[in-house]
Image 1: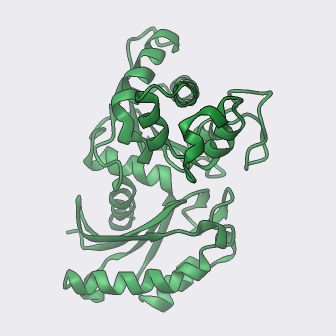
Image 2 (image 1 turned 45 degrees about the vertical axis):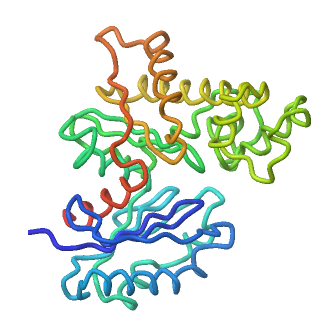
Length: 313
């Protein structure tokens, strides 16, 4: 019988912390990531939040089966280390998180890539439940992906299988990505780069976007709806980039279902129909149509997924 789990999702903008039992989040909280400053300075506050959540849910640490971290980057789930991370939490590969967990809480530790964790959450509890061939694409601070093929979660020999959807090259003449490549999906359309993209537009100073200190996709979709031409251009350009990534993922992994999730999916009413139409027109799938669905847990799939990993080894 499964026990409660301490689940942590290290997002580029927010770190989410929850006490999870099966498909239920008993209590949760989030803190600002300040990911550019590294992970180590956040660990004491993470401990403090975990202690408060355990107290709030009346969950003794002795009844917890383990702690799981859903992390960006390339993760070795066997040695339980972050191998490489893309600008966020740059010190994480040098931290022995298993040792931190044992010294801090005295419980078993597990870690997995964040997109894989989100896919597990949707696969086991959400809108891809019980399917055998699934890809997930997350649209958030960056663009993530993960894949299940013939009922097996893909990790690969070097732990990169399935998770490089955000680093598919869709513009080989494009600008340099954080990963070192040129013209990646993330470089062309993601939250971390959208301000730079917007300011490079010739029409930017005439756009209402110039009135805001922070530019994100919520603002872009809102102003596009109101007829701002620069916002419309940025929205449509991003939709094209995400569609190209979706088609590449479909060609690479041959799924039945594509699940779209992440913070940007607050605008799913625009995103899902656009990507569905592009996939139907441009993806080479003579067997039929890929079922494109929004995730059931856009904000919490990774917490549910990493909790499942903890309870199932």
